[in-house]
Every structure is written in structure tokens, then in C-alpha cells.
Amino acid sequence: MELTISDPGFKEVPIDVSLNASQSTATPGEDLRIPADTTLRFPESATSGGSISLEISIVDDEMIEQDETAVYSLSIPDSVDTEIGTSQFSLTIENNDFFEVVADANGLEPASGNTDAHCIVQRSSGENVFFNSSDGGIFSYDDGLSVERSAMDLNADIAAESSTINRCDGVAKDANDNVYFLFRNDEGSTTHVYKLPASGSPTVLGSEAGLRGVTHDNGTVYLAGVAFDGAPEDGFYSVNDTGAGQSVSTVITDANLDLGSGMDVDSDGNLYAFSGGFGGTVSRTLKIVRVTNPSGSPTIETFVDPYRSGSPLADNGDNIVDVDVASNGGNEFLVVYNGSFSAENGEQWASIGISDQSISLLFNQSQLAGNTSVSGYTGGFTEPTAVNDDGEVLVASRSAFGASYYIAKVANMLP
Image (cartoon, rainbow, N blue to C red):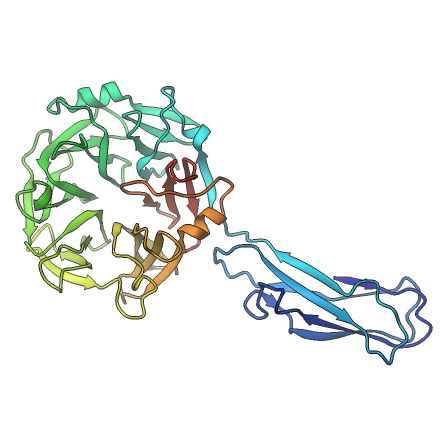
């Protein structure tokens, strides 16, 4: 900020600069590196047109925030015979850590005109692969929309399903960019484990009722089963990632589980999933559970209570519908999506440290909607989150309640 003086009259002129806290949304120390009050002085030697400046540094905290305003008042002591041209000025701190809109509604619109995006995953090349439940096909987006499998081809691939495929309950990707979907008809119970290879023909690896979560590790596709939805038992299952039409194998079951669509695996091969409000015991209800050594002698243990006292997720909803493993700075985290409409400021995204179970709120629905160039945000019914190898979080919005269809991402959010 620069101040200029006219006709100084060979006298020292002090200007008091003070933050008007009642009109400001920015906070000194947190948003600005400047004292709340300071004084600038024109010396007696100042000449007409001379200027003095005040540097106001911005704190780059890498947090998603709304634009903030700092309002400053200028004043001169009554004992100094000087008039001031303006008594107040304001600065706006523009957020530069906003979500990047990867694809808006126009970019996601297929030839059928039925725009939608569910079950998103990002290949190492950067293209986002997803299922369009309105169109019925699989698409990818990378500077433009491409058809991976048309609705007709997808339904022909899953020949055992007589009804139209219009529901995706989960998605995963392996190190070779092969993508695994859980597909079904929304009125049916049978779920099909569908492999979309990076090249070559798709495969239905296996089918079973009540599968609601999927991840991949070391040649094995792991699945979460829900007895209420038709699975043989509540628990974890598997198929290998190559054979077609396999019988689903049991990894480990527990009647106290209430698994959902979110599921992932860490670098040690441990599985993670959220057990919801219908778990049979306190130790399993509303907890994230872990399966250790799933390929050998598996054991289920309660990993963390995401709603424990002091958690930023506490008392803000109980609907964690996605769990993704991400790495940052040599540490591994679970990125969790709390899809409850009762959550504070809307749906929430948080990280949970695998080594210490520390919980950090990354962003919420209000911040997401306020930091994109498109209108609103409404989450999809499954897998609205993907985390890529760089720790970037991708989310999808659908058109409802004034929101728009789009895919957006945010970087540098993990602790």
C-alpha cells in the first residue's frame, strides 16, 4: 500500500493505520503478517508528491477458505494540521487453493445428452474413468469425453444380467490401470465384478449378491459383502483379477459388521472399510475396521472411531460412504467421505493417519461449492471421491437442488 503527500509544509506527519476488526473477516497472524495497529511517518524533509509504503504480507496456509477482507482505518492526530484524503481502505485476500474444475456439465455430456458421473477413478495418465448411470455407459475424460464402453456393449459384456445395468456400487484401479467396477441393476441384488482392462476385452470376474465395496491388491480383487443385501454373510470376499465367471471366495466374515461401498488397501496389504450404524456390537458400530493379512490368516480389528470425542467429524453425521488410502510425505492416510446431509456445513472429507489415527478435516461441501467456478455441489450416491497417486482428491457433483454436474479436484490438502 502506498500513501502520497501534497504540500507537506516541512513538518513530520504521522498516519495511524488500524485494523477495523468489526468490518474485517481476515485475522492478523492467521491471514495477514502485520500488526493490527501501526504508524507510518512522513519526515520533515518530505516533498510534495513524496510517498511512503506499507507492505502487508499474506499467510499462505494452503487451506480452502472463502475470500477474506481486511478493512483498515487511517487517522492523523488532531495536533497535526493535516487533512487526509481517505479515512479507510480495504484489501481482499483471494483464495488460491480452490478446487480445479476438471470437467463441467458440457464436458461430461455424452451423445445421448444424459450427463452423469459415478464411480470415478483416475488412471496414471490423468484421465478420469467413470460410469454414467443415466446413459448406462463407461466414459473417460481427459481434455474431452471418450466412450470406454457404450451402454449396449456393457450390457452385452454382462450377459448373465437380464436387466439393464444402471447402478455402480464401487470402483478400484490396479497399478496397471485396469479398472474394476461393481455393477448391478438398481432393483436387483446380484452384483457383477467387472474388469475394464487398460487394453483388451472386458471380463466379468464373478457375480454375487450384496457386494458393496471393491479394492485391488497383488493380483486379488477384494470385496465387501452385506448380508442384508443378499451376500452369504457380512464380511470380506475375493476373486483373482484374471479369471472369468469365478465363484466368490470368502476371506473373513463377522455378523457384527455393517459394511458400505467404501473400501481400500494400504501398502502392507491391510484392508479398510467403514462399518455403519447397524453393526451388531459397539466395537463394530460406526467404526472403521481393518483386516490384517487378508491373503493369509485374516483377522478383523476395529481400527478407529471416526466420531470419537475431539474428532472434527464428531456429532456431524454417521454416513462414511467412502474410504481411500493416500500417501503424502512418507505417511499413509485414509481419506474418508462423510456423505451425511446432517454433517456440519454439508458433506465432509477428512483424513485419518494410519500410523497414529489422527483425524483432520480437509474440506466440506460449503467450501467446495464456494471455491469452484460452477454452481453448487450435490454428491453422487456412490463413490463420489477418488484419490490419485499424487494425493489429489477428486469429487463429482450431480445436478440436484441447484447444483451442476461436474468433476473437480483439490491438491495439497493432506497433512
